[in-house]
Amino acid sequence: MLTQYQLKNKMKVLLIESHKAPVVAVQVWVKTGSADEKKKEEGISHFIEHLVFKGTRKFGVGEIARIVEGSGGELNAYTTFDQTVFHVTMSEKDLEVGLECLSEMMGFPKFDGGEIDREREVVIEEIKRSFDNPNQVASQQLFSTLYKKHPYGIPVIGYEKNIRTVTKSKISKFYHSRYVPSNMTLVVAGSFEKAGTKKLIEKYYAQFKNEKLNKIVRASEPKQKYFYSNYKTTEFQEASLNLAFRGPGAKSKDIAAIDVLCMILGVGDSSRLMMKLRMQKPLVMSVGAGSYNPLDNGFIAISAHFQVTNIKEVFSGIQEEILRLFSEPPSQEELERAKLNIQSDEIFGLETVDGLARKVGIYQLMLDDPEYVEQYIKQVQKLTAKDILLTARKYFNPNSLAVTMLLNKKDEEHFTKENFHHAIEEMEEAIGKAQKQKLPQITASKLKVIDIKTP
Image (cartoon, rainbow, N blue to C red; front, side, top):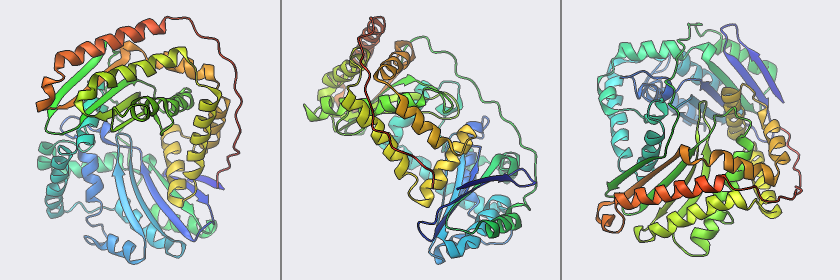
């Protein structure tokens, strides 16, 4: 059962009771992330995520972690483009401990100068390590190619030069302009007694000062008129290919259809891409499809890792499966399997208190509707084969295509930058022609329906 209310300082509170186990999750969702940073601030949100663990008005450095872990709990945080989330999971008997610790971190961080300097080196080392991770490098390559003006093109972790020079004053000013009660949602999920929990929340969170939220206007991304490409050589052994088409943000009515489309195309061993590029002939180490739908416009991506000697067949196979979506709608079996898998994932995501709190938190932050899961499942259930085919034709637009590639330097003899651009041009032309072809005949299919109820 979900209870929603607001404190006098405008902090939103969501309480979700679930007595399956004597455990409770407490999460504070802040609707601010790296995309809300200005020039020369890049990375400050992630830095703040680290710093709130480094002492508060009541607790010293490391004391909060010792208290939580000493109670058998887990404490952590993460930063994205759109939000920063702080979370603790405890036994139900230690709920007050979790509430107090997070309230101190979020309401009264000390931002001690010495701790800021010590933590700089930790974050800078994290930035340096990201350059040695092929997945992170490939991901950043794709984002910076797609987003040339919008801040999604800037790494969440930021830049070393900013972390080295950012002052205590600037950190504090940014924190008190964005990490304010009206921009926060407190989520408590699990086994608890509602009346007592409300009193504890009033005790620890109502004291937050209702500071003014500094509203941010993000730079908009110009309309893409032709395909973008980015080809880089590295020391990594495997070749990495990312192929993306621009997609909508989280509030789009097309999200359910896009999710089913991606499931059919490239999620799991039975997906079309996996069957073609891995099962029928082992051309890739891995391949998949997925969508990224943040607050602002996102994208649909196909990713593959392979030996460069297979590059032409991999390109050809991906192109064939995209074109196949335009002419061959999903079979009843494909559609039913995709829908059931998505519905099952939603259900399983609600089984733990952490998953329950996370699901409610993200729907509240992105859609202002913490109970959206039921509406989403209904949208998935209603989708037809024709919906999927039309969605593919709508979003797999050659003018919104971006293709990035990482290649080992020694492999350029097999596949040059010119080869890369030629392959993209062929793909763009083939997709453009296929989009104009007449729609095929489509018969309706039926689906077994799963009843979804939020715990």
